[in-house]
Image (tube, rainbow, N blue to C red; front, side):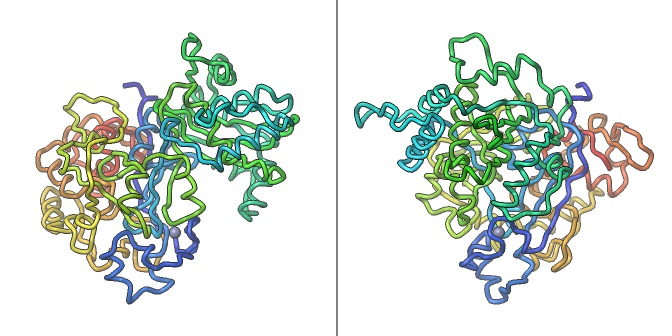
Length: 510
Ligand SMILES: [Zn+2]
C-alpha cells in the first residue's frame, strides 16, 4: 500500500462541551425526557435533573485527519462520522443531549410532497420569469422533479451553477459572512474560519484540484445520459456556486463519494430567502446524483425532536443504526415510534440472523471487501437499545470482568464510576479524555477483549505505523506488547473506533 492510501490521523479523543454549546436544541428542550437516550436513564436521573446537570452537554468523539482517501471517508460516513474541515467526529449517542442519526436518502426513496412541488414551481418562475410552465397533463402523471429542475435551468438566461474546487475566494467569503450574520446571528467568523470549515480537508492536493475533464463532465451534468460514454468521475470536496445575473447567490459545499454525494453545508444570500434555495439544493443534489449514477444523498445528521434538523425527513430516507452499521427506513422508525422523545434505537440483529458487515467487525485475515452498508430489508421489529445500553443493560454486564481481563493482558483500561454514566469526564468539567468504556458504535470492550485474547490484535504488528512526535519519526509498530502503556491504549482505542482492518492501514500520530 502506498503512503497516500494510508489514513494519517491523531489518536481518537473524546470531547465534552457544556450545555449551552448544543447547536441543535440550545438546551431548550420542552420535555426533559428528550435529553435522555433511554427511558431507564430518564427514570434514574429525572429527580436530580437540573439545568446544569452534566448530562446536558455535547459529547463527541473524533480525531484530526491529516490524510485520507475519499473512499476511506465514504466508509467513515457509513460508520456515523462527518467531517468539519480536517476534523472527523461523531456524537456519543448515549450521553449527548440530542440523538444525532446519520441520514441518507436517494431519488427513489424520495416522494415529493405538495409543498416541495410548489417550491420547485416557484423556483422555475423566479429563474425563467415565466408564470406557468407546462403542467402535467393528467393528475396521475408523476411530477418529475429532476426533469422540471433541469428544464427550468436550461430555459433560464440568468441562472446557472458552477462546480469548482473547494478553494477560498473573497466572493464566497462575503456570501458566507452575510449568511452567518443574518441567518445564524454569528459574527465571530473570519476568512480563516471559513477556510478551516469549508475549504480545508484531509485529501491529497490532486484530489482537491481535480482534472479539467472531471470538472467539464460535472459542469455538463444536465446533458449527461446513461447511454453517453462521458462519465462523471468527480470524487472529493467540491463547491457548487449558484449565480443569478452573474451574482453569487448561494453555494453548496459537497463531498463527492463513491457511494453518493454528501452535503457538507449550504449558504445562501438572505436577499433570496423567498427562493427556498436550501430545499431546491437538496432536490438539485438528488438530480445530480441520478445523473452521476451514484446511489445515496448523505444529508448529515437527523435529530427527531429538533425542527432545525428533522425537516430532512421530508426527503425520505433512512437512519444509520450505529451499532449494527445498517440503515433502517425512517418511515419504519416512525411507525414503530422507535425514536420519539429523542430516543436511541439499536436493531435486534439476532432476530433475523443476519451478520453485520461493518468494517468495525472485519478481521484482517478475512477477504476484505469494501461493501457499503445497505438497507436490511428483512423483517425486524425490535429495538434493543434499552436491553443493551439501559441502566441495567448488557453493555454493563460483566464489564468489570473484561476490564480486568484486558488489564491481565497489559491493556490499560480502568473501571468507570457506573453511577456516573455522564461523568466520563470529571464531573461538570469540559475537555478531552480517552474514549469511554461504553458508547454506541464503539467496538464493545467485550469484543476488544476477545481480539486481544485470541491474539488478533498482534495482526497489527508490522502494519500499523506510528508517527512519534517526540522524535519526529515514523516507525512500524512491531510488537504491541513492547509499546508504552499510553500507546497501547491509543492502539486499542483505534481498534474500537475503526476496527482492525482500518487500523492496520493507519499512521497514528502520538
Ligand atoms: Zn441538544
